[in-house]
Length: 299
Image (tube, rainbow, N blue to C red; front, side, top):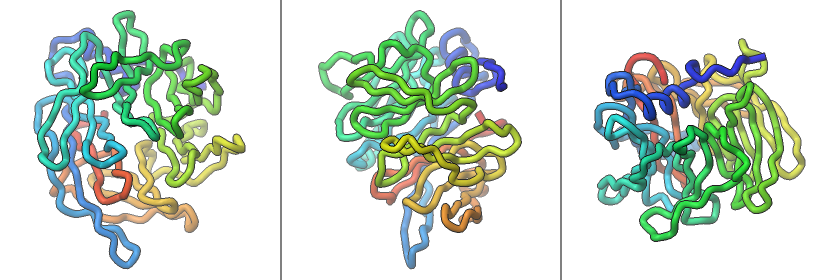
C-alpha cells in the first residue's frame, strides 16, 4: 500500500511553502507557454511557442476557459500565497482573479457555466472546493462541504466532479455537487484528471502497479472502469488531443498515444524552444495548447 506522505507530493509541498515559508528560492521555477495547433492531413503540428508568463517563481496549472477567451493559471506572486490569474488571449493582458488571505489552486471552469472552481487552502489548512464567478459581486461558494482534503479536481458535467483526495492513499472520488453524494472509484492514482472528449467519462493514471502506471477510463453512466494503455516513461500528466490520441511530455518532447494502436510515438522535440515541460492543456477546439516548463527537478 502506498504510504501517505505530504512532503513527497508536489502539490502539498507547494501548499506548505505557500503557507509557512518566506524563502522565495524554494518555490519551483515554472512558466507557461502557449502553442498553436495546425492540423493537416489528419496530423497535428504544434508551432509558434509563446511565453505567457515570465515571472520568478511559480506560474502553473493552466486551464483554458470554455469560450477560449482566457487562460487561467495559478501563481505565487507575493512570496507567501497562491492566487488565480487569467490572461486575455486577445490582448495578452494578465488579470488577477483572486486576492485573498488563503491560497487558491487549480482554476477549473465548470461544464456549462461561467463559473470556475478552485481548491482553496483555508485558514485551518483544510483543502476545499470553492465556486466563484470571476469579476462579479457573487461571493465564493463552498461545494461538497464534507470534503476537506482535495488535491486536484475535474468536472465531468455540470453536477459531477472527479477529485484526487489526500487520504491514506491518493484516492479517486466522484462527487455530485447538487446532493453532496460521494462515490469512491479507485485508490493509488496520479494527480492528472481529464474528461474524455465528447463524453462525461473520466480518464486518470492508476499507480496500483508501482512499476507500470496505466491510464484508465471510468464511464460515469455505466460505472465501468477499463484500462486504456500505459503511460509514457512513468510520467503522469497527460491530455486528450482528440477522441483517439493522448499527449504526454518527456524530456522536452511531445509524445502521442493512439488508443487503438496502443503505441506511443514521438511527435516533436521542443528542447531548444521550451526546455523541459510537463503539464499540458488544450482549448476546446484544439487550436491552442498550453504547457508548463520547469527548471531543475520536475515539480
